[in-house]
Length: 330
Image 1: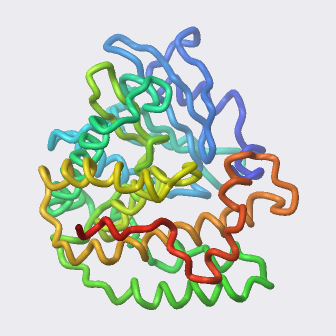
Image 2: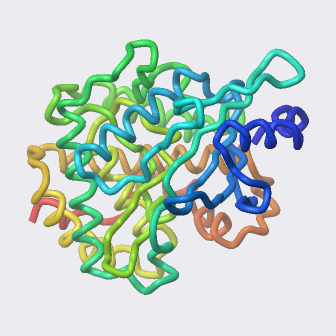
């Protein structure tokens, strides 16, 4: 989160958000948030999440587009954390700050269950459900029309969405060149409706909970864009194998049930499987750039980040596949 946003936030903003969503002072608690302030609160009917972001990062209309998409998916039977209205019937409440911006409050039904790594659900049975969820979302995306054109989310390669080159060190000419070559190919891919539409873009296991029955509820749609379904699929595979002690062995073990589940809900031409290695490489370079922006790469103390960055430059520079994907077309 930008320091400027932190500086503008105060208890008055929170109190106004609570008032607008009818939240009692003893029924709310702060959670960890990265780009927004997150709170859990209780009301009649269950547990909910309050998210307070800022217009410096997302405009009110972009957030309206996000919740419009989420609630369309929920209405279609997808396992997503539905957005709920305020006391005034609004899905997004704008609260002016002391300067020229607004804090934007939205609320969602809290996902049932917990992280699959914490409750023992990270196994084959869940991978099938994981694939089914993404497949259903992609099937629904083919009929989605945003409720208001002003709310339309960006396309994946809009100039303001492509920040990799800005985040890379100026001296990192090799990775920059690899990125440009990769993008030159990906931007030629067709955008027909059965392979391209609204996608989550970050549907990894840290962004969903699993209940006691193995049902998944996906959340955090903040990065949703119009993009290729194959990119959404690649993200699931990317994070499933990242920092795994034996990624090449685990990848097909994850993929086979995941793809089985996906195909139960949506039909995607197998030719798109040839693009998954490239979309994996795109996320690899993107994450590499984000880490350069956000960390001192010569003094990494975060174990996950350090493990990811170990040998990463050489792998990108030498076109080493993110993971062996020979299994994709078996």
